[in-house]
Length: 346
Image 1 (tube, rainbow, N blue to C red):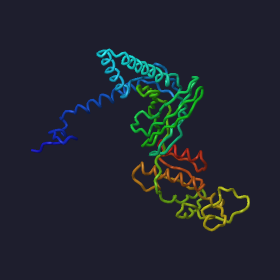
Image 2 (cartoon, rainbow, N blue to C red):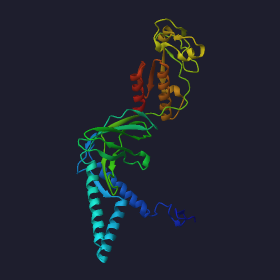
Image 3 (cartoon, rainbow, N blue to C red):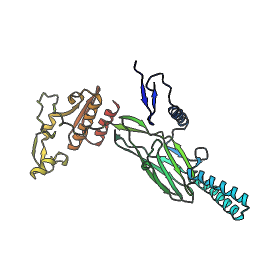
Image 4 (cartoon, rainbow, N blue to C red):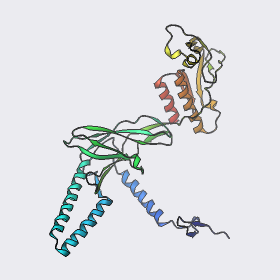
């Protein structure tokens, strides 16, 4: 009879720890309760892209140096009482008064500040999305040492620190990395300060209402673009080079649009050549999910996203067919964004 044995991080064997009926460790239970409480508390916060900090949404607690200062003051007070030290009383109450003033200044540093989130731009999955936040200060004094970060960020590098000028504003940028395509709500943000003494931490939690569109992650090394399809005239499809460009080119003529110039060929042969518009009018480049030859749906979307970027870089007109949707051939930034949006939401 086999008994499930799992060793803890301290090297002590715990019989039955891997069985379904094994009790959950106390630290896991505490973490679970803490996570549920945090979700419940964050769900009560309003969704808004503009947040004005008041006494109702700004919180304050002593830091570790603050607790150490409190213990030190207590020891100084007991020693001054026992030995009747007038200078000890003076030092104790002077430090206590400084801590009290520092608490008031620290809380006032955030109170009255207005946070405004700018609409985030679409981004590709796996890449960092930058969020721009405007900090507006209507007070006549400078606000020092204000940090902003994503709430779930645990590394100090994720914090952005700034000073907000008097009766002015500044822009702070923070980043988060979405891992999946689609529409994602901006994660909760937090702002804090420990100015001026570092004995108190004043912070707030902000739930923006904005959403960010995440495109599929492009395939790192996609194959060449698929061959062009004949238009509704029955013309045979043209051949395609390995670089994905149509072979129908001619010598450059004065007045040809620059988007028709094949710059790769010009760099190699030092002669300007243009795409044959007559041949281009007889063929269409369609980026079809069926042409990716991939079984994984996410891999197909990744390859299509790479093809969209490649075709846009080459200046070719292209259409898109995916998940029963069809976008007519076109070109330009707006057409590229439309294709990527379809790939993100399909």
